[in-house]
Amino acid sequence: MQLAVIDQLVHNDLERNRVIEENHWTSSRELVYRKQSSYEFMKQALSQDSAEPKEMIIPGPNGKEVTMVIVDDSEDYQDPTDLVDGGVIYGHVKGDENSIVEIGFSETREVGFVIQGDEVWKYFAREDGQIVLSVINQAQREEYDLTHNGEAYLHGHSH
Image (cartoon, rainbow, N blue to C red):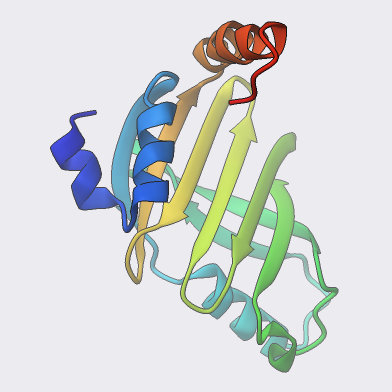
């Protein structure tokens, strides 16, 4: 990804450096949109009295959407007032209990990932309702990690 495009997506130098580093194993990156943030979803879900599992639509690459079945949350939320500082929700893609979905959120930001089979999506919030979604090539990432982190370890340096 070209630096000019990266500069349009990120908020600060830390994000910029991370995105540049991830280019080695990212097969695509795009701006996707959330109809409802994780914070808003959890606030609404907690105000409804239902024993049904919570399900949330999350955006994927190329206009794809998947349904996340929430199986746990970091704080065992009971009602909307428990969401003051945000939190973490865990789950899987509906219909694929071997997949993993994890989303950390606050009222204004969120970051998360989806692992389903060989496919890995990683995302972070850019602006309200906007998500920068990266599709990770696991084989390239593992090769990069072995090459760079292995070299650093062998030479007594950390990355």
